[in-house]
Length: 123
Image (cartoon, rainbow, N blue to C red):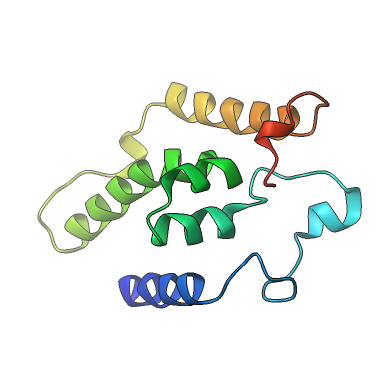
């Protein structure tokens, strides 16, 4: 069921151009504060990846192409655990790795809103 939902979402994101205004809602954080959140540009980055434009994905939101391999691994391991083919659990991820991830996202969030670091903004 989850795989089907992800596939359906990928089809929608690939077929609906996120660069056209009005196709997707505006980020609530951006609408309220005028600042980019860590997720701003994610739909455009995923759309770029689905069309084979890796460089374009990095331009929209560099966290997306960097995070997808880890998210994919976690998803595959979750499916294998559900089918009884592994005992791996996301709780086996070291706490230090979680703190590094949170620190990276927080630093990205701050830096993409600092003048001079506009290369981190979605467009």
